[in-house]
Amino acid sequence: MTTVLGLYNYWIVIALMMIGFYVVIAASNLIKKIIGLNIFQTSVFILYISIGMREGGAAPILKEGVEVYANPLPHVLILTAIVVGVATTALGLSLIVRIKEAYGSIEEDDIAEKDGSL
Amino acid sequence: MYLAAAVAILFIMSLALARALLGPTLFDRILAVNMFGTKTVLLVAVLSLAAGDSSYLDIALVYVLINFIGVLAVLRFFEYDPDSRI
Amino acid sequence: MILDILSWLLIIAGGFVGVTGAIGLFRFPDFYTRMHAASMTDTLTAGLILVGLMLQCDSILTVLKLALIFFIMAYTGPTAAHVLAKTARHVNLKPYLHGKEDAS
Amino acid sequence: MLLVTALGAVFIRDLFAVIMLFGIYSLVSAGFFLDLSAPDVALTEAAIGAGVAPLLMLATLALTREKTTPQPRAKRSIHTSLLPILVVTMTGAALVYATFDMPFIADPAGPAHNHVAPRYLQASGAEIGIPNVVTSVLASYRGFDTLGEVFVIFTAEIGVLSLLGFLADGSGRQYWQFEDTANLRRHNILHVVSKALIPVILIYAFYVQFHGDYSPGGGFQAGVLFAAGFILYAMIFGLQAAYRVVSPTALYWAMAIGVLLYGGTGVASLLLGGNYLDYNVLGSDAVHGQHNGILIVELGVGICVAAVMMSVFFKFSGRTAHFYDDRREVRK
View 1 (cartoon, rainbow over the protein chains, first blue to last red):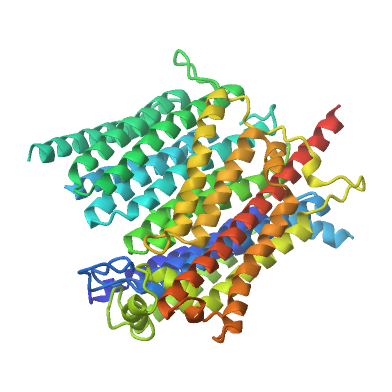
View 2: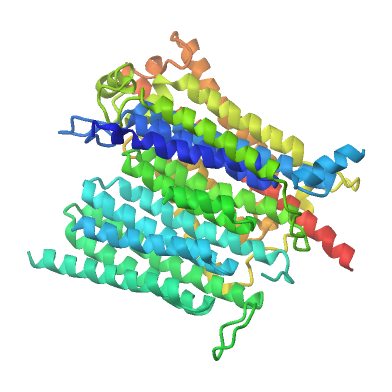
């Protein structure tokens, strides 16, 4: 695929990224914002992995008689990024829990309202 | 032939996805997610045989276990509030 | 050769049951009937396709791995379905009875 | 399919359904990774995205959801709903325009395939001697990166601990002192089935941990899987039973030990005359040294990740137990 259709992976990534972006800026619920961030994050993962893929490449586990492997470097980066991603998601969620305890709501509008009245 | 099996499984998965999107009650969604998970396992198994790489089956096994745990995690959510209605 | 045909028969049967169950999941009127379709598909399709694949592969390790997946699926699938149905009963999800619309 | 799921996550208002869809979304993207021949990543994404992340989100939802259904919000002004769409479309268009300079998918001439990656693929067989290149790059060539990632996970857990690790109700009670009413103990069949299943999960986690040199797997995936086994135990038998098996304090120690094991390996190689995290000096020859180094480092990663995941789960559900405990007292 050497035509312009060979770029389809980027377009999928961009579409996902924009969906995630939209959720982050448009949703008022904080949990939903976190989910948007996660969708955004996954789109970056897909970008890396699709860059690392090669035509007819096997998984990067060395075997007899296989010549072409996928690029292992993006795999390593993304593998760690996924685990770090869930750790930071946990941090964000715990912030949400604290916000709920302090403000009694996780809707952005309510929180802004309370802040304004203080 | 592997392709045919994969296509059949993908078809099942898309119907399950539709049910998860439409699902009037939460339980319909949980059911669809569960079914989606098991079909992913089958898809991975078919792909692994088609690619001739048995190490993909390890991943399928992880999917089975995680799927089970995921469903239970959701059900536990209902236990908090015995009065909860859907 | 016979093994090949048998395996493809099993895989086709599995695919057929699966597609039927998926249509059931999509079309049935309420949760409990959908559950019937889905859980039957979960076990039967998985079993047929996995056994079909087992007959297809040549290394004993792959067969063992597939068998392990099969057993764990046959073990967890019905359990999950059982707990799901029980919880649904517990929170008073109403079944669809006698054509009456029952808003639950 | 990925797009449909993501869009669904945008439009459905019910948070519970969104979380379910997020689980599906993770499974689909894991399948996509597998199709792009990245089994290690698919394994991680399946365990994390479909297992742990929705679990934490559900716990948060249980803690924050409203008792009453929220009022239908007043119709937003056109200004607030159009602006995000405009911003998103413009950013998207700019990014699509940028893709025309990117290499085509699976093109061997792409820049990502022509710097260090071929060296890893060609030389790691002789230099490190384990078949899974991902593991050797992870633990050896890019050991510093991974050390940094482990520190990030550790720090994130410290953050969670400082946010949720104590209860501010002035009673001096700890979050693990509350009866967990949400256990699934009354499901007898489930009880028996998981009793048999949990050892299988734990053994499988060890397989993923120590067989990671030869097949997809390694410390990160094994840690998550191990934690998932314990989380299953805690879900079914209640948190109190799980605390008796692993006390929260033991988890803090395990986290620190995991990180120290990784860092200590580096110091050991320093003391033996090599560079930091240079495993060549850890064995009788370079290849053996690499083997030992990778094994220990992966073990450190596994311990740290498992402890962090369990600890985060304990905090979230311990807090949920406290939340519902208070609520019951109010009702009385």
